[in-house]
Length: 258
Ligand SMILES: Nc1ncnc2c1ncn2[C@@H]1O[C@H](COP(=O)(O)OP(=O)(O)O)[C@@H](O)[C@H]1O
Ligand SMILES: [Mg+2]
Image (tube, rainbow, N blue to C red; front, side, top):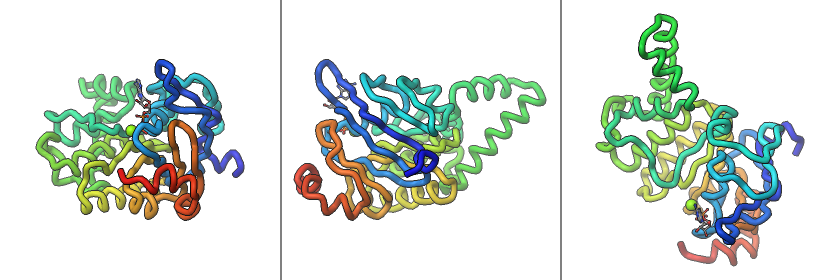
């Protein structure tokens, strides 16, 4: 793949916690515009990898190339500014705030500061604040959340809360969206809806997606590319069909019930 086709290159990344190698010399590429699924048993290092990619954890060795720029180190704010957005495995919303206000908290810190300053009043500032509100409104429509706009997040169903989280990541207009188990704990219908929204984001907004997901039918239906981790190492990398047919992957993961 040429370097312009590749939005993200993970090169020999390692990360340890007190001697435990959570990620072990991991390398893989993500093509611009694809949906890439990260799969593997619990403790394989999937969430740690997302934390490395958006600068929450500092990796010990290796490099990340994002949009043809190499990083030895990245912090969450600069990751957000460069267009890396994410959601978390455990929902981190403000339960006593409305849906639209939760979505607005997804503006990166520097945008949010100006948002608050603007909300306080200058005419030009008020126009910019209004522009952010319009952007949030657009996301509510895209995610079919208009009816819930002013509802407190704590009063929503679990499935809708996960959708608000997705909206909060989208408002910063990421070019790479990292989703940590966006369908965990959902019933079949909620999963199907979430899969549809992820596919819509990928297709209509052109967002590249890296998602962690355990449900293999979801992974196989949604993704273009699958990377399999086990004990911090890569044990599979290919199309869904290739990965499903790989004996090492079957042994490490697919043969095991989770
Ligand atoms: N903040 C942390 N401190 C110590 N150990 C951690 C931390 N985060 C993850 N780990 C360890 O790293 C390994 C990988 O965990 P994780 O990335 O959460 O796996 P997964 O998301 O694939 O289930 C596990 O052994 C886990 O206990
Ligand atoms: Mg995890």
